[in-house]
Length: 131
Picture (tube, rainbow, N blue to C red):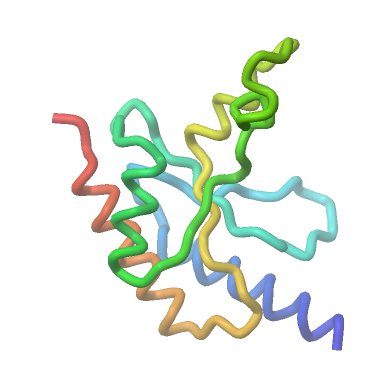
């Protein structure tokens, strides 16, 4: 069962990659070459030179279209109990938190579902282009 699970995850990743193709407002984050990866998450990196809309705005618009996405993570220093705590060298974490959108990645997602997610994600990001 696990090998089939991993095959589905890898196949779905490849379909996302193909359907996003050379989309200019974001790209699917690749995995390190030469490694065997189960491709647990499918992460899109949004081009912040072209899109200034916040992640909450993008997520909300996709939710209206029945697509559940999420950011890569919530930064711990932004969580209520830790707001006044000292942080150290957070150069990369805020950069990625502002750019990475995790796409639906269930093993039961269909090719049609993936095509819909890609189409709607492209439409939403195109609505958010800087003017």
